[in-house]
Length: 280
Image 1 (cartoon, helix red, strand yellow):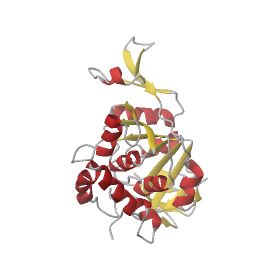
Image 2 (cartoon, rainbow, N blue to C red; image 1 turned 180 degrees about the vertical axis):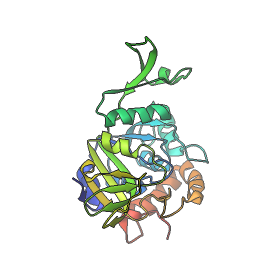
Image 3 (tube, helix red, strand yellow; image 1 turned 180 degrees about the horizontal axis):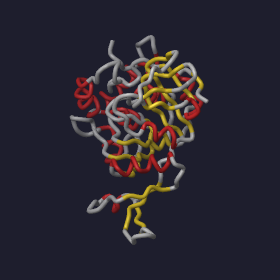
Image 4 (tube, rainbow, N blue to C red; image 1 turned 90 degrees about the vertical axis):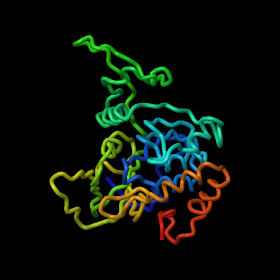
């Protein structure tokens, strides 16, 4: 059952060096505050898993948290490359980064398989793609019923899944609204699930199409207002497009990156440690 903890305590208790960690959120509800806490606590040797890793993973890779990335498309949305990720892949700085790249559809299938407790995901995919030549986890099997050649990949079953959501009620049930990517599947596939939320409420006041994660699927909840900034949280605040644009120049230079991380994440100036980086 879900336990309400400070973000600092939740990360300290559940995220260990060497773990496979998925910080999921698609377009919005990206758990930046949780990622920053992982950085502050100096976690190392992580396998990071995520559909469309963007600035948050650029920061975690640049700070030396990751040894491996399982992903589909990595980039700064609307801007271009993730320069800290490129530095790690091309020059091994601050440490070499192993890559296992998939398509978006394959990552979604792999999370769904993990949520179902299956060892692999099977799909029609990778036809005409070069990815099977560089990713040894992409295999092919023959359907025993039709003889069709199908792609198969290992299911995504992270040690820890971390998501951001809008609300948690006092019983520990969590409401996720807006664009929902693979947050539900990541939580159900993981050994441990951590959720940061904008607020804690008496009742969720849900609607028929709501996505509610029951308390028994979650291990810890941390109340972190603006915990998804600079991405957005539907119904709470908008995406900071200016920050995404500014990140390109910050991340291109190792010294500029290190200085920004030191000022805004490692040595936060805000009184609220868990919301570092969000605008005043």
